[in-house]
Image (cartoon, rainbow, N blue to C red):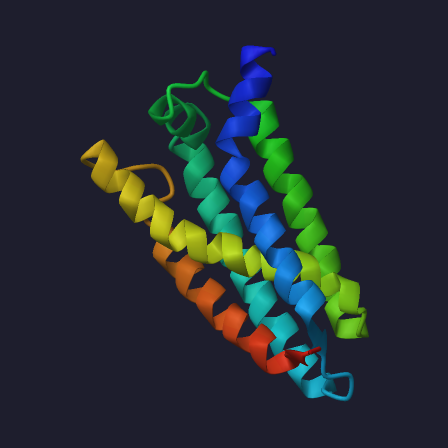
Amino acid sequence: MNENLRSMLIGTAGLSAGAFVALLPTILRRPVDADLAGRERTARLFLIALAAHCLHFMEEFVTRFEDRFPALLGLPAWSENFFVVFNLIWLSVWILSAIGLQRGYWFALFPIWFFAIAAIANGIAHPFLAVVARGYFPGLITSPIVGVLGVLLWLRLQALTRSSA
């Protein structure tokens, strides 16, 4: 396997695991259909969290996350193009999901659950990576904000849905 492809797959494996975990609440929980106000509140919080994530992505890009994170794993650096396109694709999916949530499309919840999980993971992982690196690690400054918003979003999603069991 090409080393660059291997680096991208291994380096993003945590996000793949997060996406798999996001399937669980998507499948096991159903939205409360009549809760238009709840959907609006959740969409607003989600858009605020997305804005924070944009700042987080910008911090990561400016401080060379695409070089430092793979190197920490003993992998080749990612190209700037891969890193930017990967993030912009996800931001696009999440923005469309916010629109879907406002319109009541239940399948829009999967990417939002995934975002909440990824945001919480960012809030934990970046401080941990800074400890491992024994100093600043790209994304550290904005990660606590993203992490807290991820927890708040998770709680909003819990309130917006109910167990289908």
